[in-house]
Amino acid sequence: MTTKPVEIYILSGFLGSGKTTLLTQLLAWEKERGRQVAVLMNEIGNISVDSRLLPQDTPLKELLNGCICCTIQAQLSHQLLSLCQQHTPDAIYIEATGAAHPIEVLDACITPLMAKQIKTCKIVTTLDLPRWRDRDRLSVRVRRLMEEQVRFTDFLIINKASDVAESERERLIADLVHINSTAPQIVTDFARFDLPLLYDAVGTHTSFYRTETHQPAHAAEHLRVRAFSYTWDKPIDRNMFEAWLRTTPDTLYRAKGYLRFHDQPQQTMLFQYAYGMPMFTEEPFPYPSTVVFIGEDLPEAELKAQLAKL
Image (cartoon, rainbow, N blue to C red; front, side):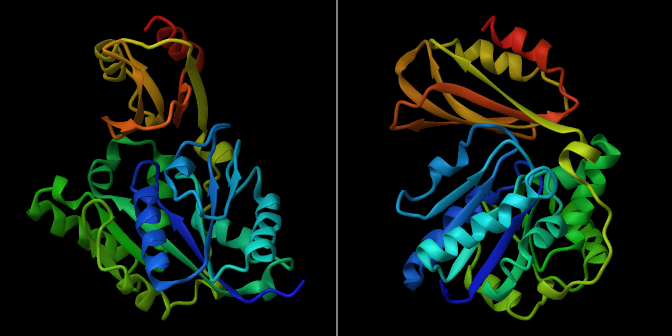
C-alpha cells in the first residue's frame, strides 16, 4: 500500500516538563491548518492517562509497559507504519516517555520499514527550567539524560520560566546555549508560544541525518526508572493523600491518574504531579480511581502499603 511521505515530530523532555500540554496545543493548531495528524504515545507503566486528554477524533497508537528507546523499540516502526497506512497523516507526533533518550527514539523511527515513508523527522524538547536549576538534587543518571535531551534537539522549549527569577533565568539559559548552540530556543510558561515558529525553525534542521554520538540512558538499564499503578475501590481522604505526597521520596518524578475524594465522592478528579506540585482538575468521565507513579529506585511495596491506608 502506497502512502504519502509523513513528517514525524518527536516530543522529548524529562518527566513532567510539559510535553502533553504542548501536544494538545499542536493538535489544535494542526486542526486549524486543516492537516491530518496522528499520535503515538509511550508510557513506562501499563496504564495510559495522557491519551485521554487528546481529542477523541485523533488517530492514536499507544506503547505501554516500556520505553521506546529500549524495551519496546521494535514495536515503534510497526505502529508508525500502521498509522501511515490506516490514516495517511500529514504528520505524526510521538510523545516519548520522559525517561527516553531522543536519539534512541529517532533511531527507532528510521528503520528500513519506515525509511521511504518519512519526509522529515525532528526532535522537539521541553525543558522544566526549575528542575534544570535544581538538577544537582537529581541522580547523576537523570542529570545526564536531561543534558542529552537538550544536546540532541532541533527546537528547545524552556518551560515554566516564570518560576525562576529573571537573573537566574539568564544564567541558566546561557548554560543551555553552551550545551546546544544551534537549536532555536523559546522561553515560555505552559508551553505556550507562537506555534508557527516551531515549524519554521525545525524546517532548517536535519536530525534525520544526525551523526553525533550520544551517551545511552535507557530507562530500565541506566536510569532505573520504573512505574507502578495503584487503584482504590472507594473515595479517599484528600488531605491525607496530599500529606502523603509530601512524604514521598525526591525520586518520585511524576504521578498521574484519576481520583475520587470523600468530600465529592461522585466527582472524578484528574490528578497530575510533577516536581513536588500536585494539580487536580474536575474530569467529566467516571474513570476508575487509579494513579500511575513514575520514579527512580522507588520502594514500591512500601509506597503501596502506605497508599492502602489512605
